[in-house]
Structures are given as C-alpha cells and as structure tokens.
Length: 116
Length: 117
Image (cartoon, rainbow over all chains, first blue to last red; front, top):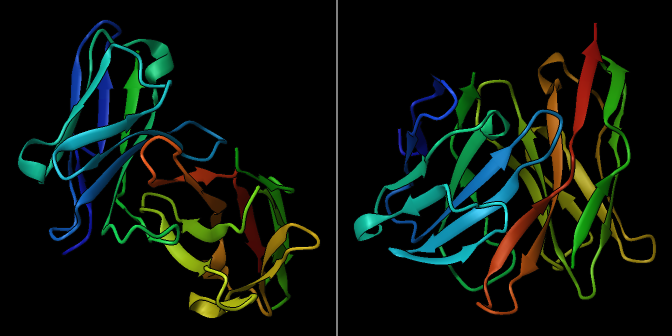
C-alpha cells in the first residue's frame, strides 16, 4: 500500500496524559499536513512541513501541541496534558509541491482521539 | 480570506435519482476548488478539482462540478445516485499564505449524502 498511513487509528486516554500520533506520507511527497476534524465539521488546518521544516502553524495549535518531521520522512504529532476538548479526528495529508494552488493532497485514514 | 459554504448539511436522494450538493465560495482571486469524499473509517478521497482550465470538471465515479464565477458556485452533481455514494462530501478552496507563498486547504463544513433504496 503506497498511500498515507497513520497510527494508531484510535486512541483513548485520560485527561492530563500525553499522546503521540504518527503519520507516514507517500514516500516522494515533500509536503506533510496535519488537520483536526471535530464532529460535524470539516477538517481544520493545524500545521504543515516542507521536508523537515515546519513552515506554518495555525492558531489552533496551542503550546501543548508539537509536531516534528525528522529527516523529512514520517511525522509525529504530540499533545501534552490532554484535555477533553482535544477529542477529535487527527488527519494527516501529504503532497508533492509544485508551487501551484491546485496541488492535490492525499489523506490518511486519521487517528481518532478520545479524551476521558 | 478565502472560504467555502456548503449550503446543505444533509441531503437525501433515492437510488437512481440525480444528486446535487451545493457549494459557494468566497475568493478575492481566481480560486482552485476541490471536492473530496469521506467514507466512514476511510481517508478523504479527491473526487475532482477546478484549476481554471475548464469550467465543467469531470471527476471519478460519475461526479462532475461546474465552476460559475458569476454565481461564485461550484456545485457537485451526479446523474444517478448509487448506494455506494452515501458518504460525507467536502468542498475545499485552496488559499495562499501571504507570508510563505504556499497554499493550504480551507474546508467547508461538509454535506452528508444519504441514498435511499
């Protein structure tokens, strides 16, 4: 399978715990994006990487959130001291940058986080 | 800032009848627009995209969309619904970051399509 993969698919945690999600993009894609999707809403942009550089962060990404993409390959999204409001689907997408507005992003299946 | 508005949160059609999912956009310049579909427990899949090459865009699975600048619309249609079309559909506009010069997606709130037997 050469698509975008995400692990775990589901995560249940208690409030205050730290969680980490992983995203493996399509191998030749240099861009990687993280989105958050809550029930009844469309995905909202969190952050993106160009290779290993994190170039943009949304205001939704509080200081409890950190994302990395070491060596420009897979990426991790960590949430520290989780809160119930963090419960959502976290989506990862990748694309091959051509500098054009119509670049297609390829999405993974998402990680569903439930904070109790 | 760019935005998209999906006018219906839920649409129900009978199998074999036409599908219309409505999307209006707001953009200060010629936008790139997309329709994605999300099936349960599956990733978002691109149905089609508008890149200013042609106003009528054909996508996968028999879907198509027409870009109408005068109406700022990009409605998604299909002549005949199939049970497998039941899913969540998202209209998306691509917005350029002024600081980085790169593009990001702005999603609508989605339309859930239900297909009745």
